[in-house]
Image (tube, helix red, strand yellow):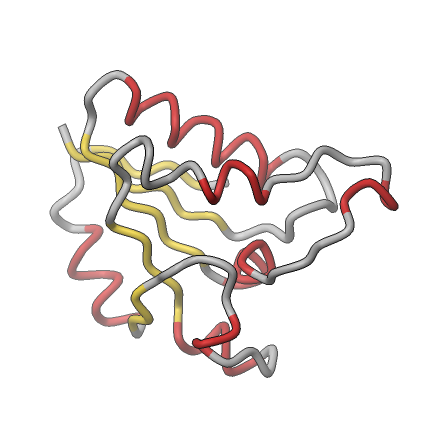
Amino acid sequence: MHFAFLLRHPPYSKQHAREGLEAALAAAAFGQEVSLYFMGDGVLQLLPDQKATQLAAKDTSRMLQALDMYDIENVYVDRTSLQARGIAEDALAIKCTAVDSRQIRQQLATAQQVFCF
């Protein structure tokens, strides 16, 4: 089964970002095909050198680094969201494929389940 996870929240405002990543890792651990889509403020999760401890929050960067270990290879970032926040594609902490909204819609149409966080 193919699961798509839309990660639309910043990394440390609430638990949405962490819960989305945990759910994606759990699905992958149970052998599901997983695709991640970072959109809106969710692209902020991809910035390097975040200081979670200063916010008294758990760091999500370790989960991002573990994506390969869980065979999550389909990691996408919304190009428009990056541009709106002045973030360059080559400045991200992990390797992602930048896509536009049309490509995202086409890819989501192939997923059996779509989860929004």
